[in-house]
Image (tube, rainbow, N blue to C red; front, side, top):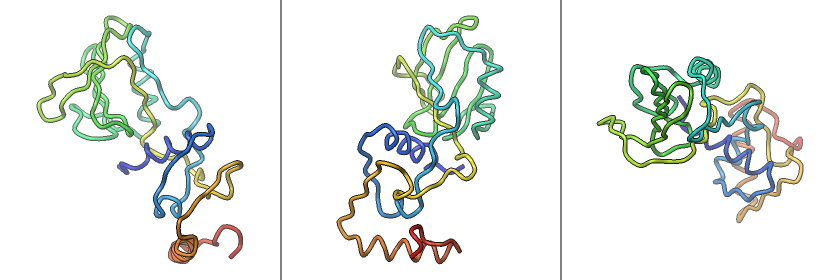
Length: 173
C-alpha cells in the first residue's frame, strides 16, 4: 500500500478546485494524479444511512484491504454494526458505529489498543489506489500554475526522472 496515494488525490482535488497546493520538487516531478475516480471521496456523516455491504464493495474497489482488525492505512474491518477504517488521508482510523443502517457515531480510535477516543462528525475517505492513466504533469492541467524557487533544479530533476522512467519529458524537451 502506497501511503501517499490519498494525499496525491487530495492535492489533485485541491488543484482542480482553484485552491493553493504546496508540493515538493519530488511530488511535482512524479506528476499529479488526474483526481479521484467517480464517486470518490466518500463522505460519512453522523445520522446518514449506510449500507455496510455496499460500502465494503466500494472500499475494495478503491484499493482498501478488508482485515479482521485495522492496523494501518488502507485497511478496513466490519464486525456486526461497526465499520473500522483507516482512510488514506487520515492520521488516525475511524470507527463508524451503526444502529441498523443509520450512522450513530463516528470516533477516532487507537490502532494498538483498538479503543475509541475522540468523536468526529464527518469522515472523508479517498481511494487507496490511483486510477490507471490518471497521472499528468502541471503544464497539462488547465489553470494550474507552478512556482519554483529554482526552476533549473526542477528542470534537471524532471529530465533525470523521465530518463530513468523511460518516458518523454512533458513539453518535448
